[in-house]
Length: 217
Image (cartoon, rainbow, N blue to C red; front, side, top):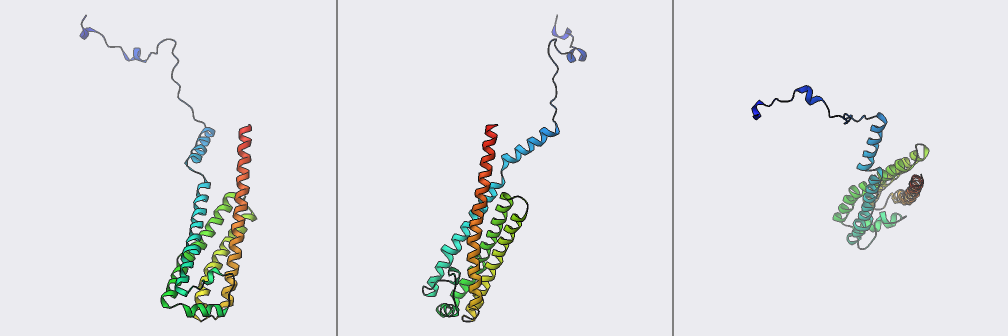
Protein backbone atom coordinates (compact mmCIF):
# COMPACT_ATOMS: atom_id res chain seq x y z
CA UNK A 1 0.00 0.00 0.00
CA UNK A 2 1.28 3.44 -0.85
CA UNK A 3 1.58 6.19 1.69
CA UNK A 4 -1.17 8.17 -0.04
CA UNK A 5 -3.70 5.39 0.68
CA UNK A 6 -2.91 5.28 4.41
CA UNK A 7 -5.68 6.74 6.55
CA UNK A 8 -4.82 9.47 9.04
CA UNK A 9 -5.85 8.77 12.63
CA UNK A 10 -9.05 10.45 13.63
CA UNK A 11 -9.28 13.11 16.34
CA UNK A 12 -10.99 10.63 18.66
CA UNK A 13 -8.14 8.20 18.24
CA UNK A 14 -5.57 10.91 18.99
CA UNK A 15 -7.42 11.94 22.13
CA UNK A 16 -7.31 8.44 23.59
CA UNK A 17 -4.39 8.01 25.96
CA UNK A 18 -2.44 4.74 26.04
CA UNK A 19 -3.66 2.20 28.54
CA UNK A 20 -2.04 2.41 31.95
CA UNK A 21 -0.94 6.06 31.65
CA UNK A 22 -2.58 8.48 34.09
CA UNK A 23 -3.82 11.81 32.73
CA UNK A 24 -1.68 14.89 33.41
CA UNK A 25 -2.92 16.89 36.39
CA UNK A 26 -2.48 20.66 36.58
CA UNK A 27 -0.87 21.87 39.81
CA UNK A 28 -3.16 23.70 42.19
CA UNK A 29 -1.81 26.80 43.95
CA UNK A 30 -3.30 27.57 47.34
CA UNK A 31 -3.43 31.02 48.93
CA UNK A 32 -1.13 29.89 51.72
CA UNK A 33 1.44 28.55 49.28
CA UNK A 34 1.34 31.80 47.28
CA UNK A 35 1.93 33.82 50.45
CA UNK A 36 4.93 31.67 51.37
CA UNK A 37 6.36 32.04 47.86
CA UNK A 38 6.02 35.83 48.03
CA UNK A 39 7.72 35.96 51.43
CA UNK A 40 10.57 33.79 50.21
CA UNK A 41 10.95 35.98 47.12
CA UNK A 42 11.12 39.11 49.26
CA UNK A 43 13.79 37.56 51.46
CA UNK A 44 15.83 36.61 48.41
CA UNK A 45 15.66 40.10 46.89
CA UNK A 46 17.03 41.78 50.02
CA UNK A 47 16.42 42.67 53.63
CA UNK A 48 16.19 45.85 55.70
CA UNK A 49 19.59 45.00 57.12
CA UNK A 50 21.21 46.00 53.82
CA UNK A 51 19.63 49.46 54.04
CA UNK A 52 20.86 49.81 57.62
CA UNK A 53 24.41 48.91 56.60
CA UNK A 54 24.30 51.44 53.75
CA UNK A 55 23.01 54.24 56.00
CA UNK A 56 25.55 53.54 58.74
CA UNK A 57 28.35 53.48 56.18
CA UNK A 58 27.22 56.77 54.61
CA UNK A 59 26.91 58.43 58.02
CA UNK A 60 30.40 57.32 59.06
CA UNK A 61 31.78 58.58 55.76
CA UNK A 62 30.19 62.01 56.24
CA UNK A 63 31.58 62.18 59.79
CA UNK A 64 35.04 61.33 58.44
CA UNK A 65 34.78 63.92 55.67
CA UNK A 66 33.52 66.73 57.93
CA UNK A 67 35.52 66.18 61.11
CA UNK A 68 38.67 64.50 59.77
CA UNK A 69 39.14 66.17 56.37
CA UNK A 70 37.20 69.43 55.90
CA UNK A 71 37.29 71.14 59.30
CA UNK A 72 40.90 70.25 60.20
CA UNK A 73 42.03 71.69 56.85
CA UNK A 74 40.43 74.98 57.86
CA UNK A 75 43.21 75.42 60.42
CA UNK A 76 45.55 76.13 57.49
CA UNK A 77 43.45 79.24 56.76
CA UNK A 78 43.28 80.33 60.42
CA UNK A 79 46.95 80.28 61.42
CA UNK A 80 46.64 76.88 63.07
CA UNK A 81 43.63 77.73 65.26
CA UNK A 82 40.98 74.95 65.48
CA UNK A 83 37.44 75.57 64.34
CA UNK A 84 34.75 75.99 67.05
CA UNK A 85 33.08 72.81 65.75
CA UNK A 86 36.05 70.80 67.06
CA UNK A 87 35.93 72.29 70.56
CA UNK A 88 33.64 71.28 73.38
CA UNK A 89 33.35 74.84 74.70
CA UNK A 90 34.76 78.28 73.89
CA UNK A 91 34.26 81.92 74.72
CA UNK A 92 34.02 85.31 73.05
CA UNK A 93 37.80 85.79 73.20
CA UNK A 94 38.38 82.52 71.37
CA UNK A 95 36.06 83.46 68.51
CA UNK A 96 37.45 86.99 68.37
CA UNK A 97 40.96 85.59 67.96
CA UNK A 98 39.75 83.17 65.29
CA UNK A 99 37.91 85.94 63.45
CA UNK A 100 41.03 88.11 63.41
CA UNK A 101 43.14 85.25 62.04
CA UNK A 102 40.73 84.47 59.17
CA UNK A 103 40.39 86.59 56.05
CA UNK A 104 37.35 86.91 53.81
CA UNK A 105 38.24 83.83 51.79
CA UNK A 106 38.61 81.73 54.97
CA UNK A 107 35.25 82.92 56.26
CA UNK A 108 33.68 81.99 52.91
CA UNK A 109 35.28 78.54 53.03
CA UNK A 110 33.97 77.86 56.54
CA UNK A 111 30.51 79.03 55.48
CA UNK A 112 30.62 76.64 52.51
CA UNK A 113 31.60 73.71 54.77
CA UNK A 114 28.74 74.54 57.14
CA UNK A 115 26.19 74.77 54.31
CA UNK A 116 27.21 71.48 52.66
CA UNK A 117 28.72 68.77 54.85
CA UNK A 118 27.59 70.62 57.97
CA UNK A 119 23.97 70.08 56.91
CA UNK A 120 24.28 66.70 55.21
CA UNK A 121 25.95 65.01 58.18
CA UNK A 122 23.24 65.74 60.80
CA UNK A 123 20.53 64.75 58.33
CA UNK A 124 22.33 61.46 57.75
CA UNK A 125 22.55 60.92 61.50
CA UNK A 126 18.80 61.48 61.83
CA UNK A 127 18.04 59.08 58.96
CA UNK A 128 20.45 56.46 60.32
CA UNK A 129 19.09 56.55 63.88
CA UNK A 130 15.49 56.45 62.64
CA UNK A 131 16.12 53.50 60.31
CA UNK A 132 18.00 51.53 62.97
CA UNK A 133 15.23 52.17 65.51
CA UNK A 134 12.50 51.13 63.05
CA UNK A 135 14.40 47.93 62.24
CA UNK A 136 15.52 46.97 65.75
CA UNK A 137 12.82 48.18 68.14
CA UNK A 138 9.17 47.17 68.42
CA UNK A 139 6.50 49.80 67.96
CA UNK A 140 6.21 51.97 71.02
CA UNK A 141 7.95 54.62 73.06
CA UNK A 142 11.45 53.38 72.23
CA UNK A 143 11.02 54.13 68.55
CA UNK A 144 9.54 57.57 69.10
CA UNK A 145 12.26 58.56 71.57
CA UNK A 146 14.87 57.49 68.99
CA UNK A 147 13.18 59.51 66.25
CA UNK A 148 12.96 62.55 68.51
CA UNK A 149 16.59 62.27 69.63
CA UNK A 150 17.83 61.99 66.04
CA UNK A 151 15.72 64.97 64.98
CA UNK A 152 16.90 67.00 67.97
CA UNK A 153 20.53 66.33 67.05
CA UNK A 154 19.94 67.49 63.48
CA UNK A 155 18.29 70.72 64.66
CA UNK A 156 20.99 71.45 67.25
CA UNK A 157 23.84 70.74 64.82
CA UNK A 158 22.46 72.90 62.01
CA UNK A 159 21.59 75.71 64.43
CA UNK A 160 25.10 75.51 65.89
CA UNK A 161 26.55 76.16 62.43
CA UNK A 162 24.50 79.33 62.07
CA UNK A 163 25.32 80.51 65.60
CA UNK A 164 29.05 80.06 64.98
CA UNK A 165 28.83 82.04 61.75
CA UNK A 166 26.90 84.81 63.49
CA UNK A 167 29.33 84.98 66.42
CA UNK A 168 32.35 85.12 64.10
CA UNK A 169 30.77 87.91 62.05
CA UNK A 170 30.11 89.82 65.32
CA UNK A 171 33.72 89.47 66.48
CA UNK A 172 32.90 86.95 69.21
CA UNK A 173 29.60 88.32 70.47
CA UNK A 174 27.13 85.49 71.03
CA UNK A 175 29.88 82.92 71.58
CA UNK A 176 28.31 81.62 74.82
CA UNK A 177 25.12 80.52 73.04
CA UNK A 178 27.08 78.99 70.17
CA UNK A 179 29.30 77.16 72.67
CA UNK A 180 26.24 75.76 74.47
CA UNK A 181 24.92 74.35 71.19
CA UNK A 182 28.34 72.89 70.36
CA UNK A 183 28.53 71.13 73.73
CA UNK A 184 24.98 69.83 73.34
CA UNK A 185 25.82 68.60 69.83
CA UNK A 186 28.76 66.53 71.06
CA UNK A 187 26.80 65.06 73.97
CA UNK A 188 23.91 64.09 71.69
CA UNK A 189 26.24 62.60 69.08
CA UNK A 190 28.02 60.37 71.61
CA UNK A 191 24.70 59.32 73.19
CA UNK A 192 23.15 58.48 69.81
CA UNK A 193 26.20 56.49 68.71
CA UNK A 194 26.08 54.44 71.93
CA UNK A 195 22.32 53.95 71.58
CA UNK A 196 22.64 52.70 67.99
CA UNK A 197 25.33 50.20 69.05
CA UNK A 198 23.14 48.93 71.90
CA UNK A 199 19.97 48.39 69.87
CA UNK A 200 21.83 46.85 66.91
CA UNK A 201 23.58 44.44 69.29
CA UNK A 202 20.21 43.51 70.80
CA UNK A 203 18.68 42.94 67.37
CA UNK A 204 21.65 40.79 66.33
CA UNK A 205 21.31 38.61 69.43
CA UNK A 206 17.60 38.09 68.76
CA UNK A 207 18.26 37.10 65.15
CA UNK A 208 20.92 34.61 66.25
CA UNK A 209 18.58 33.06 68.82
CA UNK A 210 15.83 32.71 66.21
CA UNK A 211 18.25 31.09 63.76
CA UNK A 212 19.44 28.62 66.37
CA UNK A 213 15.85 27.77 67.26
CA UNK A 214 15.04 27.05 63.60
CA UNK A 215 18.11 24.83 63.29
CA UNK A 216 17.10 22.84 66.39
CA UNK A 217 13.60 22.35 65.05
